[in-house]
Image 1 (tube, one colour):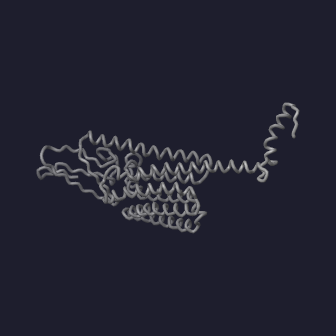
Image 2: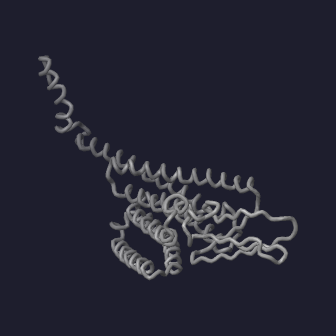
Image 3: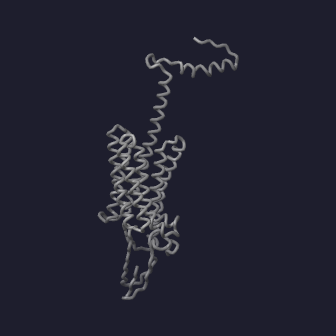
Length: 328
């Protein structure tokens, strides 16, 4: 940034992710400059360069307006992260109780999405890897790739793709393995711009592809796929709005830029509801199976198994207390 007054450069500052976070002044996750402008005409020139997709909203204001913006961002991100962490811990507790892989995959997906978000919003650089310029440079494409990859893994588990469409499962697994290898090559060769572009394209592919998988799974009789379809529609709309904002197709606002986060929050709630419904249905099916196992299907009378279950405690109680017992 160059501040020019009466043809002279009165201030010249540089900041960005190419230097450790501790060297920023002030230390803010955004690129902030504290500058006093004297009365009269002042020219401000800003030069920005990045291999990543760039959204560069510029705000001029005083301390009060900046503080108000920070408070809003703090509370809104707190709510967003709170929802994700709550859903993450809830599904983790279910997985630890019943050990079904799909709950672990969902926890993994939510964790990677959370990791991706704190990476590209700057929270990670401000609070976690503040001294690592390499991490700030490469964790964006890495986290985006991991979020999409774990999302596909969860979608395939939730939609039962492996059993319903084994060939689709196989070819998708091969494609994902090749893509990960290519991303590792980009990192090794230092091709950051291409790596970022590839990861964003992969996320776009993931959103559309899993929506297609939900449709064919639903048509194959997998009734829980309807939950995934609704959640995926919300995600497609939200990520589409955010992408159009980043590309400059629609005007930048806080709401349009963070539409993907709102959609993912809805996605997390809907899919957690779907997973809970699967548990309830499994419990009902288990109870029904237990009832049918104790009953003769023709006469609807209890069978020998039910007789043993019912009479064993009665017989044991009679022996223990030396009661007389009559069985008819």
